[in-house]
Image (cartoon, rainbow, N blue to C red; front, top):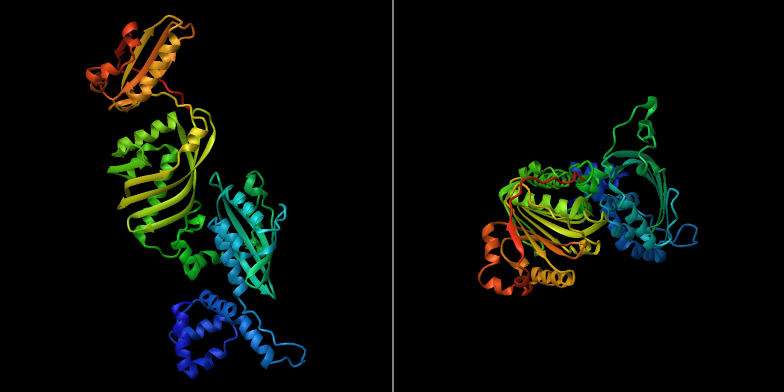
Length: 501
């Protein structure tokens, strides 16, 4: 219960005049107005939530007490306690808030154990599990959704909603569709929800939807000003504000039009926007823009992998990964937490594997530490095993715009020796060479006629390579090397052509 309501109740208990004024209120707006004039400003949502709480906690007790002390005039049963007007409306807005945050698990908690849920012409869902599955499937196909309510009213245990529902598609285009919902309420849960709308234009952008299709269209085809009910809900409703603080942010604030929720701290809002712009720049492979959101001494690290320092090294890492291993194609944030100069995002990140073209989803948590609006530390915690399961076929590429020294070694062998040689070189690379400082990569090739083996390796400098073939390292080489006298030379890159896609 809000402090504003508690303060009002305390004052009313001491002030008979205030009690009398409040008794004259016949509508929630009148009640709120009287409270404000007596120094107790509160919102309709606060009043609605409080009355609902009183009803849930005391409803059955009061009803049973009235059964013994206040029989109806007809003497045929106990007087009934009517549900407070507005509580079902509040329940609907709270449900919509789950949908706008893509919280399918929280969405189904608003339904009874034996619900009826029908969305347009889709299959009817008759249990919570199928509702959750349906919601998760739908959320996965859009970036964001917003309910622009025109009218919402209660009739007994029913709530009717007339609205435009705006969707942001995966290609970032937007579509707004007219919709009517009918809810049936049992206690404080929905036993039935039927959604009447044609949702096909969400999935097929070629289907035309004229602006006049809006339920906000008034006489002469004019469109009335949208009320912004759900925006207000997230900004003012105590439960909604707490959910936002817990990371259940509506997707329209982070993945659609990026509307502001309430009046956030200007610095925090700018930092969250900067992190969003950074992500989009990485996706677009706009490396100059990526650098603009990083500090000069940026620290970047994926799990327990090698740390990257400085703008150029971070950008080189991204560029090389996108060309050789996997391309980052998008993400779906689940929760976002903000603290002073720290942003934490739990998400699903989407990749396309370079070697196989397979689509892979990685669950991860990114932590950004910022100085001003630039990221100074970026840590990614993720299980990258799905990359391996997708059958990675790394593409060997030299680092561009940075120093790299290729080494090409050619072995001439008898056909009967080729397999033994490639096996011993492979083992030597995996157990010894790959752990050496300055080593970048190695690609081992064998000729189809069985007479040659070629190893193409990349090192960060000639000094690193020389250290790998002198001193104690020489004794670790396979003995077959001494028999074959390999022809090895270090080269410099003169020109490199890379496929554009």
